[in-house]
Image 1 (cartoon, helix red, strand yellow):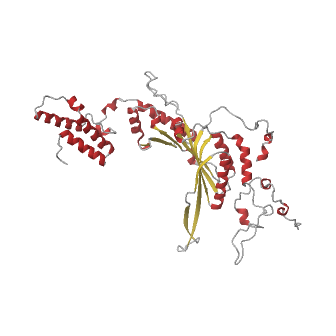
Image 2 (cartoon, rainbow over the protein chains, first blue to last red):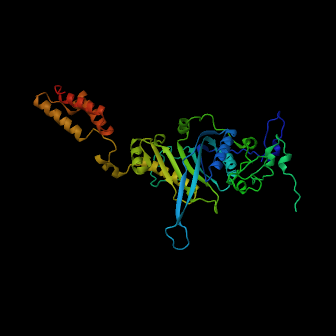
Image 3 (cartoon, one colour):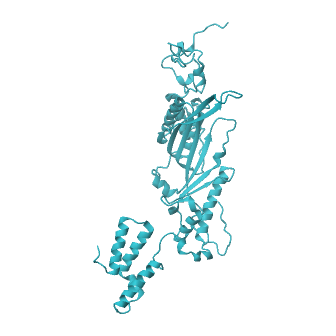
Length: 161
Length: 278
């Protein structure tokens, strides 16, 4: 992954301009908190993944608010052991789901996109799943003033988002 | 029959660049990993099986491609694409002051036959009413319109939308709802003037039975003492009546606490001029 950016081998005197970086004018959306919930059946895999995600966040300069492990949930099934009759002989299965929750604070949309893509591409197979909660902040626009003051004798509301 | 060549591990230097051995996620190759790992259920009075031909090691996802130096290299390359958080917004309060609306959306990543998840279209919008430009009547009307979605303790309005199939549509709908609520609450309908005492959110002393009773009693006391006709306004403006008014309002709005009850007792004693009782 590091070999892709051939343009970044530049002298230290000149300012580095990465040719792959493009700057656009649209304002960034801001994420106050990003909450990653990783689910898996194997605790060791989740522990390694948590170490990886925390290290990646710190290297990219994202502040990690807290990392905690919600208690595991166990789903149990009791099924008949035999294909036909033998009701008294059953077999029991259980599915254990372990969780790790990462809460990150104060991300811009580009940082969040970079971090999430990196972390999701390296999600281990099958065992761990991510559920992301994104909290965005925005400023209200047409809710500043009530519209009745500006519209004389217009009956219907021209409210549109 | 294949010639048995020695595994690559014997030719590996101790200070080699590990990220070139495992640049991407790959299965565990025992000939490429120079670690003496054993995994599996041990035989009776034995040790777990070695790494050669060990299916357990191949099955489990490994993080050999994500060692700390490799992560640091990746992040150094990715750092150019990240942007800084504005330093002026370093606390939650400042964020809320400048950006009062919070939108919550959830994304789901999992392995399966389909990458879509129907729960991903839910959008929750949260805003504090103190940041909206509302006057007293508008605020009360909004709270009545919204019902359960308003929490009085945190002064937070929460609108959850999931009636549209796409997330963008749900977001637009929630903003539309907020706009409609805001503008409708500023309107005053004709039937709103029929608001009765039961509809009031908080207790207002003026024009209530408590005020009538108090004034009635005082007037009668004055009449029996044959004092010159004191007008209602004078009575209302007097200290004792104001005290009584404040204590009744406190009792009704905040509930019955020790403080409120004792305040009410004092004010009634002063109103009726009975100092003798304890």
